[in-house]
Length: 77
Image (cartoon, rainbow, N blue to C red; front, side):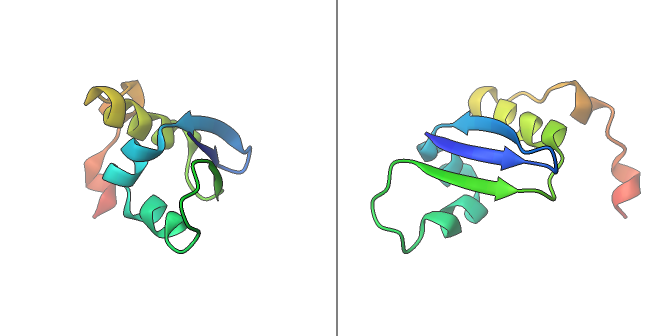
């Protein structure tokens, strides 16, 4: 399991390492060079906890939570 501390509040999420490695190059980079470690703690203070919760939901279920449904894609451009 990987413990990910998200946002300025350091909300914690426990996520299976293999799923994170499959879906996140950032996590893959975090594990590179530290050997065969099963547990690691990653801090991502600039990511909103609600957005990371959606990501975790997606990697486990292929479904997003409510917050993505209300996301305005036009504000990205």
